[in-house]
Image 1 (cartoon, rainbow, N blue to C red):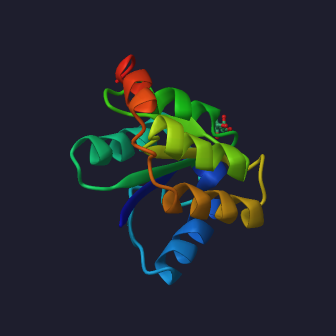
Image 2 (cartoon, rainbow, N blue to C red; image 1 turned 135 degrees about the horizontal axis):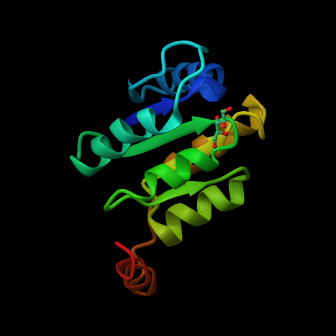
Length: 142
Ligand code: RB5
């Protein structure tokens, strides 16, 4: 499992915690930035994450900003990207099973690190259901 991760300044601190957590789990992590808490523009960091997914360079992506909203809007403009904004574990599980989401977006100003790590674990540990009805529904927009 290889994960590509990006954030803006609003998500920088949580990104560092998420990377530590993933590495402790033995998961390979590619960090595309940002690399400090200095103010920056979230679309700049959404782009390399979506490209890594499109190119098959990573299995799943994580994008963190203050709300997760800007990151999800930017990521979902890109072909083949199914970015899900999740702040609870039910949604994180359902979006993998039903939508085959390939990027998880979160807002660091919305959830604390404890819940964020549970959401991330749920997202990466849940496989796509491969149900015909879900494949059909995804095909409308992929
Ligand atoms: C930055 O202040 C904030 O706008 C950004 O992190 C994000 O929440 C945008 O959607």
